[in-house]
Image (tube, rainbow, N blue to C red):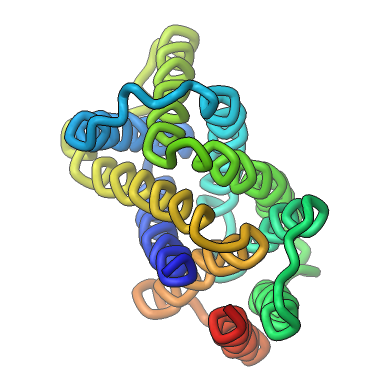
Length: 276
């Protein structure tokens, strides 16, 4: 069940990131991210109220705060990269963030099976292949720089979600979004602007925010049911989903090595799941 939930979180993250990347091409990336967080926070409040988890012990709070900071920095950098670079290149590269929680899991004593170990390696190699063809392009430096920042902070965020979810996945995410609301207020006061966001943008921002919140909670629950080193791999495949959507919807050309990367990634998913 943990593997299935982790894969589900990848699909939701991938779809949300695709729409977020498209929206950030006509609206400032920070405005898109922060605006979507408002709707995600509202959805989490409703979910927390309906499930009665407000009385949960506050041991998740430090992780929620750290996760919120890492998430804001990571998502801003990611949306900036998507707004100026090809989705099919930037998005798979960010999937290398999985190396960070996998390493954390192994250091803290997790022991995946031999088959799962091969699957982890295959998945990481797969996303690297999927991102490789244009890495040396003359104009790719800036989006790749943003992508590098995103992958580091996303890796940290994976760890904070997993640790906070040991107490409550839903309250960890609610706490993270509450911290995001503080950052939104600061941004509005400092810049005295909503970033060009209008009521016409609300439906798409709601879609992005609610899907992201659901994906985070789903991933958090997955980490409580299986090893972080394996669920992190399965949960980190969202950039491949974004890349596929970019190829299908935007007709972005993916090179043969990128398609090979997708195949290798899927092999990794199979090995991780079969070895559970």
